[in-house]
Image 1 (cartoon, rainbow, N blue to C red):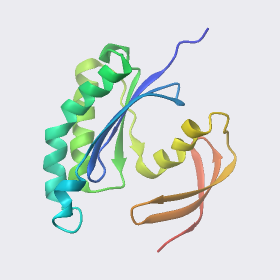
Image 2 (image 1 turned 90 degrees about the vertical axis):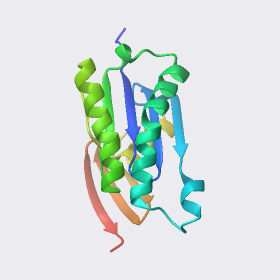
Image 3 (image 1 turned 180 degrees about the vertical axis):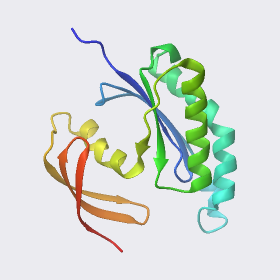
Image 4 (image 1 turned 30 degrees about the vertical axis):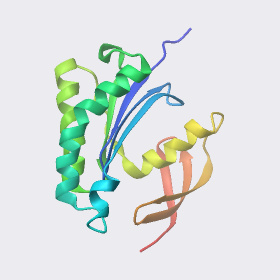
Length: 162
């Protein structure tokens, strides 16, 4: 029997700090989200500087909770997979810097994840038998694309908003 692969996904591209522990790329063991919606509501939208500062305050707590909820120890994680873009630069830097430091301190491999490709990969969690090729409509923030998913890591954007 093959060893299960545990990944720690770290998402901080906008106004939510999220850490998930995923088994074999298809099973969510935990998904902890710290939302900033109430903070930004009074400004009528996301304020990048405020978002970044709140990510700093939340990232360690959210990570610890995700490990606890998954009943997994950090040393059992096989890869740390932070979002590296697209997104708000300051917010991304918080999650990416935290992930890099964690990976360096623990010698766990770091695998950066494109935010848009992460949305595509979420389909594998919802639809356990899904395999490429398939057509995907991706909508996130100001991004909308129709994508031909040729292989797990090979994509062709057929149409996008401009």
